[in-house]
Length: 119
Image (cartoon, rainbow, N blue to C red; front, side, top):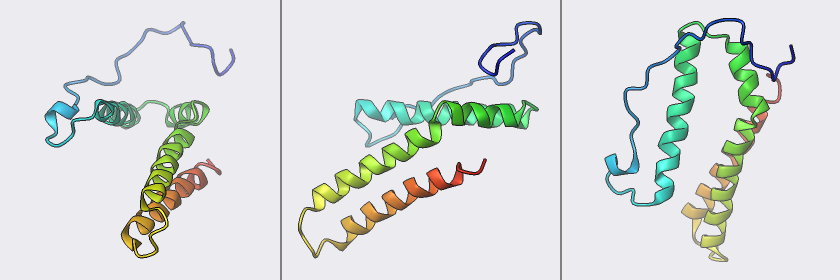
């Protein structure tokens, strides 16, 4: 059986129970439709973490995250935020806070990529 095929010989066992997902409606000040995506993504990752805590094969879960390019997707979000922050700062050489934020976002994206290089 290849790594992409499902093992259908064993019965499915529940690995997590979803009791609720926080949405932008639950969070004051978040009025963007995109604000719904981040809590859903975080909830999904927390379900995977809970599955590992309950005995799921951590190697398979980590490999599935890598195969799905989750680390790269997260890094792309941070890179895009860095670019948008830099663009908003423009040529204002005195806007240190925005430039620092853009640099920190780009560095975080690099750190995520680097963290998954050797796993």
